[in-house]
Image (cartoon, rainbow, N blue to C red):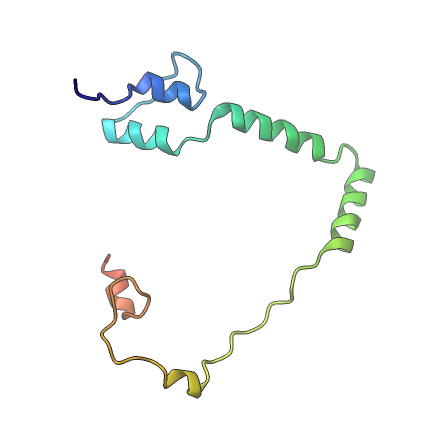
Length: 112
């Protein structure tokens, strides 16, 4: 007996789409759409929770802004510093490896 693939209706149900929900496109399109989908019930739960946290009046909105401003501890951005010469001399003499970030920009734009 050979294992068979999961049918699209079952995959759709696993993502909590309602029965009868149609996904259109080629087999690859349908597979990608269902694979990338966020389960509908998860979206509903998240949206409900976000709604409870939103301010309901301008006064609540102002209070929320003050709270965020008083607790903002984001670091101040700084400019990147050049690599010290003492560190640059530690580079090896080996050829750059594919997708290592060490190859030239034109190789990246070629689609490697």
